[in-house]
Amino acid sequence: DNDTRGGGGGGGEQSIRMLGAAKRLLLVDSFGVMFQSYHAMKYPMTTRAGQPTSALYGYCRLLLHALEHLQPTHAACVLEGGTGKSSHRVKILGSYKSNRNPPADDLRSQFNLMEPIADALGIASIYKEGYEADDVIATLTNTAVNTDGIDSVVIISSDKDLLQLVGCGKEKEDEKGEGDRNTLMSSSSTTVRICKPNLKALKSFSTSSIGPYEVVQSFGINPEQMVDFLSLTGDSADNIPGIPSIGAARAKKLLNSYGTLQEVIAAANDLNAKFVYGDKIRKAVIEHSAVAERNTQLVRLFHDLDLTQEIARSVEKSAADSGVTFPPMLSITESLRFGRGRSGETSEKLMRAVIEEFEFDSLLPNAERVHEIYRRD
Image (cartoon, rainbow, N blue to C red; front, top):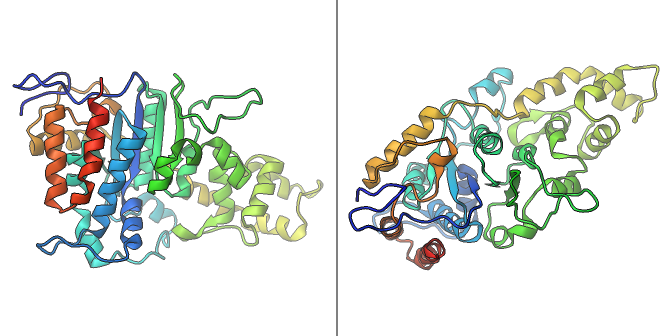
């Protein structure tokens, strides 16, 4: 096949089409999905050749369901760059993520097969050495929101660090000034929502996904306060200690009372003014303010990474593996267009081949539904 994104190959086939005029970018926290899939499987899966596939099966199944139910025009599976721990954050806190056990050998053996599976499904895989997947997701989200004319971004993840990205575009407002929590975003102002990595959440995306409204309902704060919230409470998942005696409820009240972490610290240090809590909490904030300020550097995601080389690597690798030549890319996001520049026939062939290679025959109907969706006129 020598077809390109803009037209057909030798057979004059149409390039795999995109739905409607709206542009939707799907970003997948890939290792999060893999770990969840691995631990959710009741029985181990292997190919006849002995390759473990329990996590890969869940990964492939979720990607197919995401394509079917979210119907993105652009997509990327985002991987960890190296150890899964940002070198920048480890320099700030040596014990950062040191509480995590290494993955089991049978899970680790599946990691290098994630990219070929995603590519065969028409999805780019992106990572940047020395940075975490969350940082790459934040950068791609920021790029989509501010420069590339994407209408909506959907992030598949259960990582609460990513809640700081929710609604970084403009959420549609109803008469009461609240975000419309039941509307899949398609306005000219980019909206960002998060979907948990499970099939039920994908099937009921319009009512189960997380936007600004849901963040307020769950945490009692706005998404833009999430960095300060986690800086006060700490994050046990990443081994980040917070201010002693300050949990979710107290952090919520402090931020609702004063607005930002800096204003909370200033209020605690103003001994001539009444503080929202008693002397014990005031003293804790004063004595551990440096800890909370340090935590902002650990919790806040990078929004401005240079991903030019990483995007180029993904495009070149896909072209080498599939024989499809990409035309020059106009933007980072356009490089992530679903289908990877292939014709519908080529895309269908590659998708079927990878499913059969890993013996995921039960997923062939899912793949057919995806192709049917993208074949519609």
